[in-house]
Every structure is written in C-alpha cells, then in structure tokens.
Image 1: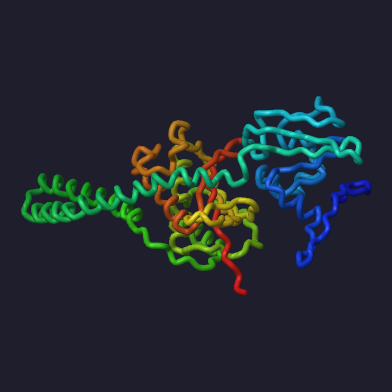
Image 2: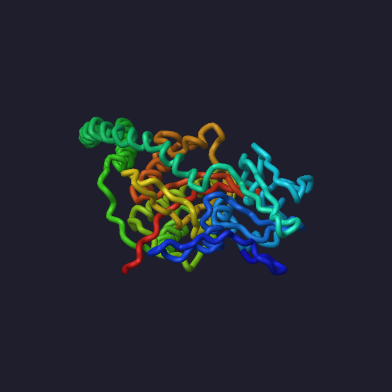
Length: 373
C-alpha cells in the first residue's frame, strides 16, 4: 500500500501453486476486506479507506482523505497513544449525515511508519439491511392473506349495496337523495380501499427487465409536479453514470409516486418546501436470495427525501407493516404496498431520519441489470 511521503506497507508474499492465478495484490485485499478500515497519519488525518468503510459511513474515499479522523467517525482519539494497540467498545459514534451508531473501535500502529495507525470499526455489517428486510417478510405474507380474504368477502356485497342505493335514489324525494348519495360515497370509499388491498394478493413474479431509472424518475416527477406536489420544489441530484436497474417500470413508477405523495402530504400538514430525489451507486449492500444459496447485490440507490417531520417515534419501526399510519385519513397501506413492490423486484426499502436539520429519507436499494455478454 503506497503511503504519502514514500514507502510501502509490505505484505508477505505467498508462493503461487501450479495452475493458480496471480496472487491478489495488497490493494485488492485492502479494498475487499469486509471490515471497515481507515488508515490515519501522524497528524490524525485519514489517508486511506476501504470499500466497507465507504459503505458504513456513506462517504466516498476521496471525500475522506485529508479529513481529521474525528470528523469522520465522530469520536476523538487525541488521548489515545499512537504507538500502541488499543480497543474501545460500545462507543456512540456520530457518523456523517448526523447518523448515530454504537460500535467498537480497534487500532494498531504501523511498525515501519511511526505515528501511522490502522483503525477498524466493528458495528452492524454493511449488509445489516438484510435482517431488517427479513424481519418484515412475515408481515408481507400476512398482508397477502388478509387482503385476499377481505377482497372476496367485502367487495362483492358492496356492489349490491351501491346498486340498491342507486335504485332508491331514482325514486326518493330530495331529502332522501342526500342519504342515498352518502351511501354511494361511502361504498365507493371502501371499494377504493379494497382495490388498494388487492395489490397484496397478486403473488405472481414481476416481469423485470433493464430500466433507465432516471427516465422513470422523470416520469414520476412530472406526475407529482403537475398534480399533488405542484406547490413544492422538487430537486434532482443524480449520478448520471448509473447502469440500468433490473426492475418493472410500472411498479417502480407506482412506488416513486407513492413516496412523493407521502412526502407532499407530510409537508403540507406539518411544514416543509422541498422534495429531493437522488441516485447513487453503493458498494457492499446485498440481500440473501430466496433459496438461500447466494446474495443479490443491490448497488443502485434511489432516495426520496423531504423536509417534513418524519414518522412519530412510536410507529417508525413499523412503517412498512399494513394498517400502520400517522395520517388521520390514511389507511396504512401505501408504504406496505411500496415494501411489497420493491421486494417483488428483489430489492429493499428503508426509512431513516438523516442530516442536520434532519430530513425524512426513503431509500430504495435495487439490483443492477446484467449487461449482455
């Protein structure tokens, strides 16, 4: 590993066995380490970081280099000796983006580089989203059964009630027509709710294909900007080099419109002015496949961010469960449907409060489409 000022961190060489490929270089090994690692110079500034560290901190290596390590990990190391190993456990780190995380820090000096240290961060692994996704599987399956039963048992009788109300209205006097209209309006409202629940009953796999995520975002933005979010500013911060995403176009549009509508409703009720759409390429996040024989990488990140107050603390951990909502007029199915549609495409969705001042972030993590060979 080359270091500023000359010199190398030297690794012991292994003899290649017959038929084996070239031995991986130290740069490859450093980048592939699953543990987040920082290299810090005698002045306490970051001089290198591996991919796992970029993923954990959500900051690029180039942005970290030259930055005081205290600013990167949110914990001071001034009292720690530079010439001896140390370990600190259960520290409350303040990570970039005003995120907090409890983690262990371990450091070791570089024997041939006085004052230089290697620091490792031991907390939830970069793929901790997998367990959170898995924890919601039961809720999604329960929602499928509940939706199928309610759609069958309720929607059919509703059509008969509405038809009877229409017949009564044609023969009723003016005062009674108000009551028949009320019956029709309430039937229509319940039928619309059932229509939304029927989205959970479709367990057929989606027909996924390579999609330009920025074209999909542009369509959703136009729908929002000309309709339910017309009074808000919509910012776009995109990585134009993103590869195609493997997904279903209509389902992704529905997900983005649902999230943008949630953002607009939250800001309209509690204050806020801007919806921000972002895209990025993230290394290190993956999801266990259904058959458990491998992992599906989810490198494409799409975020819908708003200035609203976020979910109440009491329901934040259950936002993606069906029938959970903080809206007075909500049915609690919008985010549950978002969760199902993203899961059906092999991805995951996460909710967070990030930044200073904090903003609401809904983060979609999606698979990349394979390029033709």
